[in-house]
Length: 534
Image (tube, rainbow, N blue to C red; front, side, top):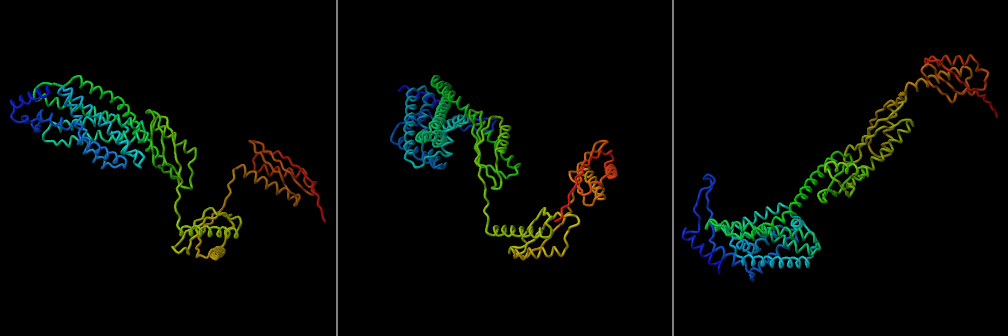
């Protein structure tokens, strides 16, 4: 009754000063904006909040219906359904009653508002738990997970929602439904998420959703109390706010803001790590010659320090992703992230479907290739095909072109008639029309200067030896070229050892000195051969 007496006094004072409920219009911000705020009278505001914040049949019906719609919307991952549940949630009024009680020093309003909020939380959580328990959907989706990881940004969202709600219930020109939606958006989805996660045994997620609900409720009640208290000050020029209740509310907000700030740091680190990891994976894909593609990249952090990266690696079937490739990628990720990184990759080989025409074409190419190589070998077994390209000329698989490069000795290139015979032979065996374009490249062996000197010296030695005995053979030939002295040793097998006297040695020595331009030390071993006639 005391509070009604105060309200009546204030209403009387207001009516004496002003016949209407609209404060005088004033131009603000240098006359650019019109001050059109039209406040609801304190009596009307109190009657409105008091009538809507009772645990009645209507309140219970709206609460259960809102929980049902929001819970089902969360389970089926539908934002539209969740928004529909927000529109009918009655949670604005008990929180507004708490704020009104704090602003008016009305303890009974604070107590009844708190009790109604606690009862709503209990009923909402149990209802969401039962709905989720009997639902066939037993998984967490994006709509649910979005309410289980709050951070400091959610605190500012709650403050904004509370400001909109407080202005809406104190202004005549703004519908009360706007306030309901603003508050329900912050309260009903996380409250339903608490029940869903509890039914699934995800207690850490339930704690996150409960933290989000608590910070939203605390911010909304605090901002509502401040706005209503300011409304009273405009009328009475006095602040009548309950200091103790306001301080307790503010301390509760600050206390909950501490873990939210920590979660914001972790979230910021996760976002930064995800961006850096994606850039590194894209760079690796572009630089890799194996055609590696990364999909379903997921980055998780542990206490803002350790980074765990999970991804699917799509790689062509003809390539391999080895342990060394994994270590190279891990090293690159550690450089860009700057923290300890754990890399978990799921390797998936990519197979390209092959049509029947492609299979037939591949089989024909393989057949033409084998026949062509066999015919080239028939021309000369020393011919070496260095490259070959077989191309289909039309879509009927009957006309084919063969372009090849063949290494040959400079004096052994085939004649044009031989090439015509080769083309006909290939065409007859594969049953196709074949056109052949072959480039013959001379095969030249390049030797070092030492190899050239050894070869020339050996030939000079053979010439000198065959002059003595045409049937003689030289083996184990060795030439060591020094700065001023060259050492030569070899073995001569002959039927006439007496033919190899000092004159022979002088002849060989002079021939080799002519080639090496050095003094030659000669060591020759003679072996007598025996001729056997049967």
